[in-house]
Amino acid sequence: MLTRKKNKVKLYPSENVIEDFYKALVGKNERKLKQVHIPKSDVFYVRKAIYMDTGTLYSLDHVERAMYLEGLLRPDEVLEPKRPRGYCSYDTDDVR
Image (cartoon, rainbow, N blue to C red; front, side, top):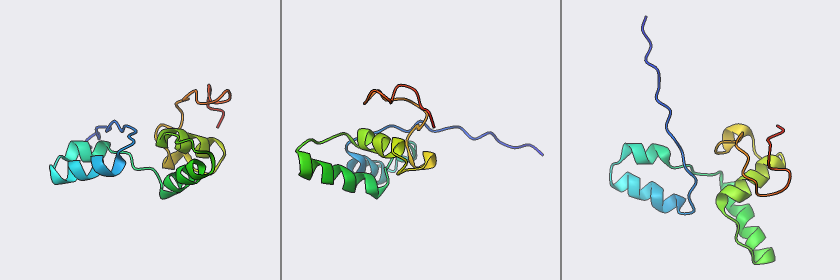
């Protein structure tokens, strides 16, 4: 039996997640639709709470990464969990 190897779709982080999603949906662009990485809703809430508390607006990727490194998100819930971002001193090599 022959099996077809799936092509991996490259996801990308975006600050305009909802807009990107709907543009791809309206444009019927399946490739773009598959590329949109939508973080868990917790990431949006935590980012807003940090902003309300500190006045600093971190990127969604930054907040998602911090939540992952703190153990609040699983690897399957994060965009490229093994790739260090360098947002902080202990984010140079993934120890998980």
